[in-house]
Length: 611
Ligand code: AMP
Image 1 (cartoon, protein in one colour):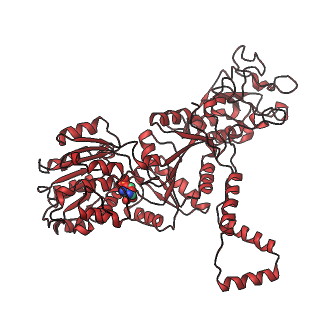
Image 2: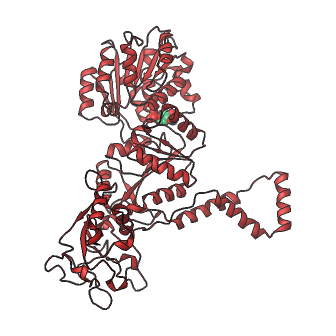
Image 3: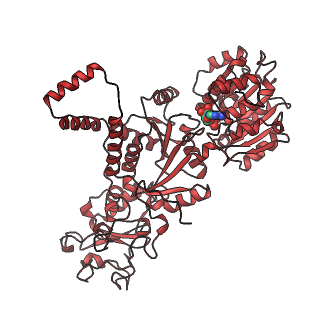
């Protein structure tokens, strides 16, 4: 088999690597129309773009089937991160291996003197990150005067990361006659400006949407109560049992916390964030490659450029900052024709935002509840059945032990012990506080948990609540507000115990609750301390004082009397606020409710939006 349009030495390398066809971006950049021209290529991550620019620059590099000896580099590839640069280096090493390539890789965090030696010895290709390349250039170690082709990989990322000056300085040091290939997932204005300045008559190539990589990711949006996020992550990991999974957090602190928590529960996990040295990162990645670790918790920046063929699950533990970040993170899976799943964990208050982000990126996601502990156990059982019922050749030694066991115990006993010991190897699933809207009882009434107020206890006569102060939460029935997850959230945010929280009134878009006046100041201070600059927690919940109290009615109990009769219930209430009974209080998803987000139980697939 050979690949048309390619020089034989590269075609042979692709065949030897087991590639059967070019990806769309590789086809486009090697067509006759693209030969010798500057290229401005928008291609998704995972589309095979590294091999694409490797192939595209062949005409500038190969002479008589080989790379000529070069005293100064002929090709330069600039990438945003160490990992991406190292990965590019690895790919070009096999692609150009038979052509006699010598590559120098110059990246921050590595030994610069070694890199200088490599550059001195004469290489045809240099791959590096902008800062380090600029360093070598300024110190005279990198001579770009004979350069024939420059490649900017993930150019949008490089500009986002503030590398514009470095890039310009490097490109200005290259001959005008060079060919410039610019690869970028997106083409925002700054990229177009950069292209205008450094490219001539560039051919624009866009394969976004054609790439197999992008199409092979199934997106799921899993809605959870804010307090259930970590439990949902654990259950998702246990449900999928992916060979390798990558978990994304927004900050290095959150990476550290989640990583510690997973390790404590028995997951083989590693962490990648800005706080890790290059050495630690290399170890973490090696552990993932040789399967000592299966879960990687990372920040966006730390995970850029990582290519792990076994990675089949990405979990956005914290919502990405925008659609591009969503695609970049998700693109760690579903690479080169393999299937992958990207799960976005969506705390109820963030549903609209995520929905908007998905729509903007034209991604069809399935909305569903987080898997429950029972879902995980059921899947475990299926897996175990499959594993144990697969016919196997047994070693004589094992058969002998089996016979000894059979002599002592019944087959049932032995099988049950086997199941137990198998289960003991796996971290147990979590019981989630809340799993979406409650079911209905036999009479069609909402189950107890769907009540919109905190059940009254002790006849509302608890000490301290005669004089209470109202606060407001920016979430209501439309965000699945439910006392079962609101209570733990209030305790965590306000540093109080459950017993110090009084009535909880849930309206369509907001929730009111009260706190004894004696501790209200302390509560309010803790709430401020546990919020970010926007006054919200990570899942978008804001707590503010509400001196006027609720303006919507309390739910009535079965006897028809208003449930909230204690003196505290009237404290600060707006005039006329206590007018109605249960009218106007609607179940989630009912008239006026928010049907669109009504999630399906895990595993029941549904289109993202009703069409
Ligand atoms: P990239 O988009 O460069 O990060 O590449 C994603 C993955 O696809 C890498 O592991 C490549 O080795 C692999 N790959 C690139 N081209 C092909 C191809 N034509 N067939 C199969 N796999 C490929």
